[in-house]
Length: 74
Image (spheres, rainbow, N blue to C red):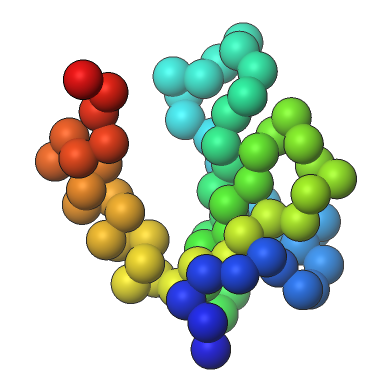
């Protein structure tokens, strides 16, 4: 299985979450924890594009980097 790919299945019934820091603003990344352990990611302003689906390992690596400041702008 690919670690990241656009979703080929219908995820319209998935339960999507976004950060409380994005309340009232557009352009939010939404996350869905799928029953098979994968993670769905989508842009809430562009729902016509399919979500990306990543493995739990990829998600955990991303979170580790984000929490460690690897993606902070200079």
